[in-house]
Image 1 (cartoon, rainbow, N blue to C red):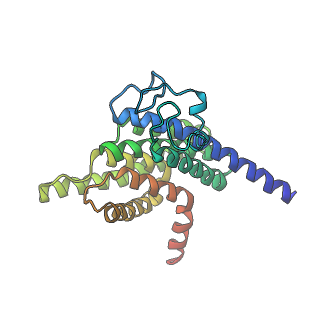
Image 2: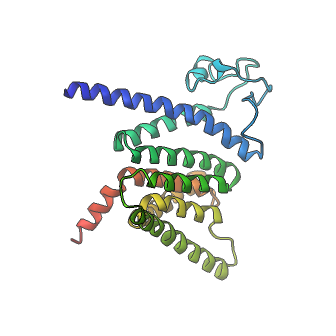
Image 3: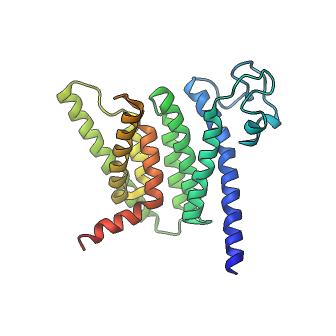
Length: 259
């Protein structure tokens, strides 16, 4: 029985990795078009170099990149390695969520959130903007899955809205005060909206932890990129993922120091 469970878990993790890489292929293309102000709903995928319309054999996540040695099958120009990285990354992120939460509604909710965070991080990294569409999508997913969680709806709304409004409201107040005193631009409105959206999923306690981790990761990006101006969306997204997986453990450990 234990051996069967090992095989079953391994199979589920493999399937989740494959699904993650498939979604990454679509989300990367979507994010690139959004960042370039192009229509992402219509049209087929094309090579950025020669404009060749990609066929089915060119669109198999990871496999097509490796098979074609990282080059366009038509013109031979190099395909950005970020495409492969994104497919492997989201596949691994899917595996982490499935491994932590199993086959559940909560797992489905978080997989949808991870997809949204993945897409908006790409756009923010390229444009320093977070489109409202990603924020709205995250809010809609959270609200719709509330009906499937098996918990009182009003209690879920109270917990989620507290997590969303308290942290985002705090950041909005600090940003306005900073801009008033320093006469400089503070945190972008998209980042504050993102804190609100992920706060719905995390609740108030985990939202404060998420804020702390986001700032730490942001500092790492500043040091690594050697640039004082960085897109903060990816930092919030990474912190949110880590908080989803490990936040409850960290919070329990921290509270246990005082109780």
